[in-house]
Image (cartoon, rainbow over all chains, first blue to last red; front, side, top):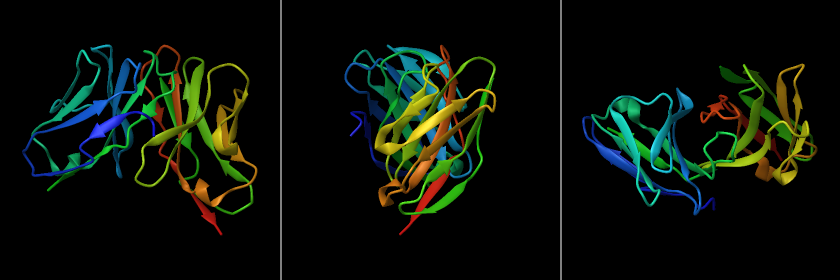
Length: 114
Length: 113
């Protein structure tokens, strides 16, 4: 158990809908990262927050947004969903700002768009 | 810029034989390198990391990796494979001070009983 929790575990929704994925980092970790894992794209970095502020962006679509709250939990919002958004979404946390710190991954949320 | 190439998408070895998973990297500056493992339906777990200290890095579960700057490689090895090693392995690169990790495409390790 990494100490990172993600909810829900599974999510099935229809095209055009909006969903919110939630992540609680390990106690003491200030950085939260979001990743998307799909068969065709592999594992891709989406976005990072550090102590409530956005710090780095990867291949995140404009339809997607995220935020980190004062209690350090984070939410990833996916809107106008398309079939291609079906994937496993991981959250990871680390103690520091740099990517050189070890990241602890949550179990993931499997999103299925029908 | 940074990138990483995992040279084998699938490796099969017999239980008790050595494991070698190959990774080459490209980085504009001194890299930090990681190996992560993902068991089926699980999140990723860090096996080991290199951050410019000793070039031979020992990780969990008997795995180790050697950083070779001249060859731009960071191959993962284990002397004797165990059935529980069957999983997907990811080589990852970043630059110290850079928040972004770049993942390889993964190597699926199969252990033959």
